[in-house]
Length: 197
Figure 1: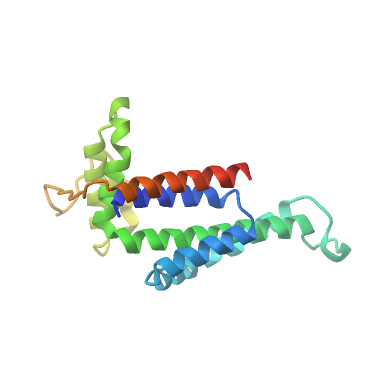
Figure 2: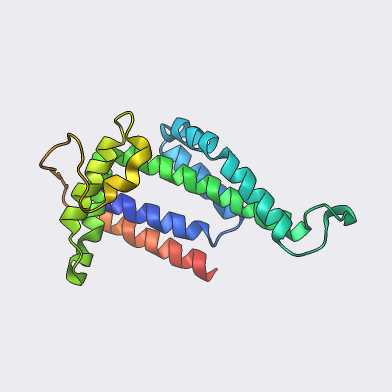
């Protein structure tokens, strides 16, 4: 599959996640992990790292959504809050699964190629796509180096001096195949269906 097609499908899935209920989220989660079983370990790692975010998200939404309190207890969250918090936490869990699938399928080089391909139309708006992709490539490469992970914002600055790294970034893009176009159209159709339904 073309990397840009994979990124388009991923973007459509992430946007669709916001419009489907528990059944759709469960189907998307199962489909993503069945199609890429290697992503399960990375997904579980993401969940472990996001555990406090998930707990915070749940508590904030459960207690700040107005409605009828659970069991009529003054200190309890509302029924509506628990429902909304559960739905949003589940959406985040499924989004992390989709992210794990994307990273396992594309890896770093594939992700750079995908971004370069998807951002090409923005050249007409004056965006220097090549510079952006090279900068992102260097940031991703330097994030692998110990001691540089905490300083990623300074690496994105236009005048940043990045230690080491290649002076040339080579992109090896396969040609778009009919199936890539078909998958992209299908993903867009599913996104529209999720929004409309």
